[in-house]
Length: 103
Image 1 (spheres, one colour):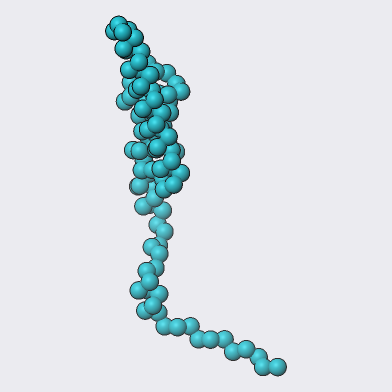
Image 2: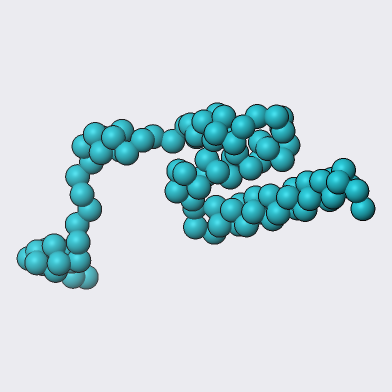
């Protein structure tokens, strides 16, 4: 086996590994969601497998980094009031029961 054949074989094995990683990340995304860096990595893997192989990984991560989701600052600035805890609910006085008319 000459160097060119070994290189082609290594490239085929690398592509198989990338496809397995893409599949695993997709399964995690469907089951429980991904953090933004992991979602960017998944997008970069998909671009690398289906797109231009000449781009650097950093270029792909940058291109795939904006997933259209609101940032943390956007979420914190919406001003939504926090949800009540179980302790808050249990500390409330019970509401009076309604009187039902008798027949």
